[in-house]
Amino acid sequence: MGTASKFESDEQDGLGWSALHLAVVANSPELLQFLLQRGAIWNAVDPRGITAAQLAWSLNYVECSQLLFEEGVRHSMLMNMLAGDDDEAEDDAEDEVDAESGAITLRPEGNELANSNAKFLQSRLIFVTDEDGKERVLDGDSNLVMAAWESDIMDRTAHLLCTDLAPSFSVLNIGFGLGIVDTYFQSYRPGRHVIVEPHPDALAYLRQKGWADREGVEIVEKRWEEALLDPDLGSFDVVYFDTYSQDYKDLKKFFDEVPALLNGPNAR
Image (cartoon, rainbow, N blue to C red; front, side):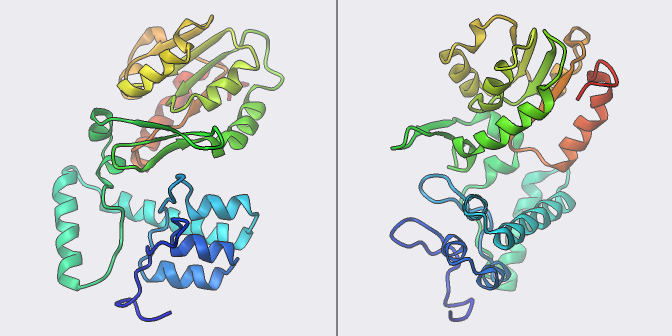
């Protein structure tokens, strides 16, 4: 394998796979652990926008999938702990520490948009359809925002949330993306379907797909933090939250608002 100084853990083969992808295909948790300990980017994507974790999940390699999941949790918790009021100052300080220590910590070249919601909302989104007709959307730094591989998860989620609800139930979805979960919500025929989406490109895509013209669908063109301040928003039988470029602090803030969004003890 070589030492960390000689081995680039994000080196890609002819398929555009990182070393982590190849370790997953080999179903080698030991190799995965070795790579992660030496700075491999846990969420690096291949040219089709697939991470090693997604590959492990699709192959049902449970141990590999668990390792990558735990690495993602550790990374997110660490970033959450290090986050301060001045994100740019924090990023600059982190870069200096890396340079002074001489450690080889490989990270995506453009992680700025994934880590700053304000900058993400001002950036352009890239909508891509692959040779199989599957869509995905990337941010301006080519980080994956949403992809068709999430469909099975969202299908199951919509089933669990919407089954056995009274006719004409209400649903709130925060974060449109490709509209995957909203499509599944629509199959249960909600009476009121509110979509909160602030990104201009996502809104343009949403309109192009005809969502703004659907009966019972309401589009709120605001950040959820602003949308929830509107007393006319009301309460819902189902609330779904899937935003991009936000962290656990943001999620906690949202959870603090959830009780006011639920219309009764059976709301979900």
